Length: 352
Image 1: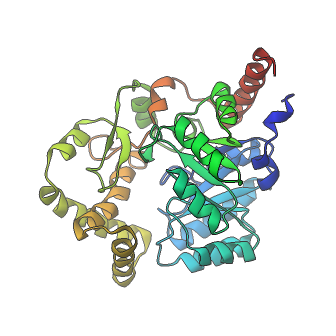
Image 2: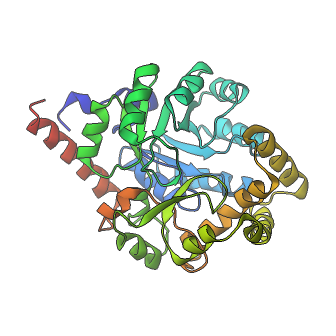
């Protein structure tokens, strides 16, 4: 890396060498992938929303046994044991807390008091302004092209729009895989890029090989943004199951969703009381119907069916549109190094 522009505000803020973030993908971003990203010089993020408290504690210990570099933990702002998880992050010296849903000002203050940086994911410039207003340290701006839950605004418009309205570092997400994308993001005003699908398709990702091959076979037109999985727009690979869900009614989807929500409760160690509290919080904060809440509880199990159990017929495969441009499975170290070489070469070609 020879161009000084590649040493961005994100690098200085977090203490990483490279402006590359591996996102906290449920069932995917475990200790092995997170530590590999950190060792390669980027910011790896553990996905804790699909972990029990005990699993998260073990995962943090495993990452710290593998690397002494900064890493993050992704959480849901409406988790019933959020306060305990924050205490764990503070106690173990985690560098970054990231959120898929907006954290409260109190949670941000508590994390800051414990020495952590707070980086939520947002989908609109007004959301970036709101998060900056409560004191977060940076925002991941995920555009329409992104995988999993994603918003309405294309990445290029979202990133530039967010960069125009906040003074904190903006991290671009949705459609990135190489050094050209990194340079484009910097030109739009970002301080780095965040990638999910590209890191899912690496050797350190624990996703079953047969499932990875399904991703690698996908074309740019093989994804769909659907609300049929959990009531919220989510980009996934188009499969027979997804087509079936889209063609069915919410009434016929509800019983299956409720069963899977209860199964996830058992796997995550959530009590029925906490499950009820979480449901009430989701209903209050997100204005969801009870059917949508059951679908939200159903989604993790449908994702686990593919990304953990390898059952392509029973689950969904969250993915960004960029999957259609990925055709190999490098190591994380090789991927990150290649992105930086490509970024450097792109800047040189542009006369920077």
